[in-house]
Amino acid sequence: MKLWGGRFEERTDKFVEEFTASLPFDKRLFRHDIRGSVAHVTMLCKCGLITDDEANTIKDALGEIYREMESGEFPFDLADEDIHMAIERTLIDRVGVVGGKLHTARSRNDQVALDLRLFLREEIAEIAALIVAFQKALVETALNNLDVIMPGYTHLQRAQPVLFSHHIMAYFWMLGRDIERMHFCREQTDRLPLGSAALAGTTHPIDREYVAGLLGFSKICENSIDGVSDRDFIVEFLSAATLIAVHLSRLAEEIIIWNSSEFGFVELSEKYTTGSSIMPQKKNPDVAELIRGKSGRVFGDLIGMLTVLKGLPLAYNRDMQEDKETLFDAVDTVKACLVAARGLIGTMTVNDKAMVQAAEEGFANATDLADYLVGKGVPFRDAHRTAGEAVKKCLVECKALADLTLGEFKALNKAISEDVYGVLSVKESVKKRVSSGGTSPKRVAEQLETAKQVIEREKDWF
Ligand code: ARG
Image 1 (cartoon, rainbow, N blue to C red):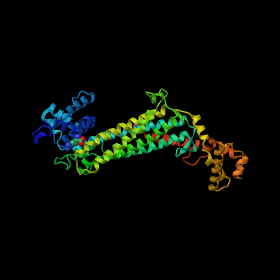
Image 2: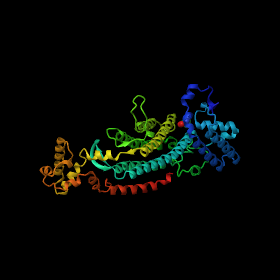
Image 3: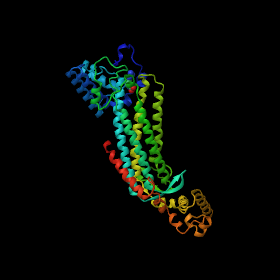
Image 4: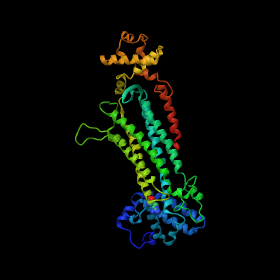
């Protein structure tokens, strides 16, 4: 007999039981569900709705169920429908009628809303800690390769020389914004829905603020209908998760390009690559590709959740049960990708020679020639044209800018003199980019100092 079976005469169809069950996936909420129930029972007792003895009996049995679920001994039964029913039915089986008092002034609607907030609050902290750990790996990679010069790209065309450490640190700041979003998401979970009951609140004299305090919430949901209908905190998290996925995917894409034989900027560790079943020479960047590929799942999770919610009348509808798999999938995927990205970065070898060679070829110093002319009083647009003409000449003659003779330079623009060769080296080019946030070694060293302070500020996540 179902706990809700009073008005029913027929047994639920077997298929319907399976179709409607969330137990196979929501059992991972058992800790949060039991924690919520213990707080609820404590409040019922404090408010005189149940006796001390009853509260203790219920709590003891819940503790036993918790331990069995944790150790894997608990005999889950799909007929229970969901984790809330599995726990409550078992409780009643074990302690008898007094177990039936647990659900006083409560509904599964506010119960599941609570469980999700408790779950997400915990996961957000774990994800934030993984982000910070990944940021640390980025800083380490930057420090280990501080002065390595590579071509910076726009349109995937060599643009200007930059420090590899500077390039890597760009990801640090992207991930820094992800951390800020985790702070925001944590705040959004910080409201207690319990006590909203099914949707309208309850006739019983409960104390919601007390429960909020017990469960570490700083406020309660102000409106019982909103309390059970609100999944905004999930959407906000999923949307923040998609950005984490975007960031990791962009890095993965770069690593795949850098690792190609055409680039050869990095070499991935054998620990983080896989072979081909047919082509013996292959060492494939599958981990990076999966980070890139899995970002698609996370976007799907966000769109799935938004779509589930968009047409729902208030308050609870069973559609909302679909919130869990999307949320769990995004949480698991983002966590795994953060771990994978950290490992990938931490184990790859940087080929500084290939990087600097690529920076020296491909006219990444053309802007430096233009800037040099500006320094000689030539308006930037004219300087730009001269540098472009110099590039054209070199392309025809298959040489680099630094290969042009002084005579050839002067023929292009008489403002050019011997000192031009000084600015054409990639090292000089990088060194001169001293504007705040620029790629000069001095600025990057400052950036790394700031980054260390940022990491220090986030240590509370651990
Ligand atoms: N398993 C349900 C869910 O995940 C729990 C809430 C069920 N409430 C209800 N009135 N059927 O959403």
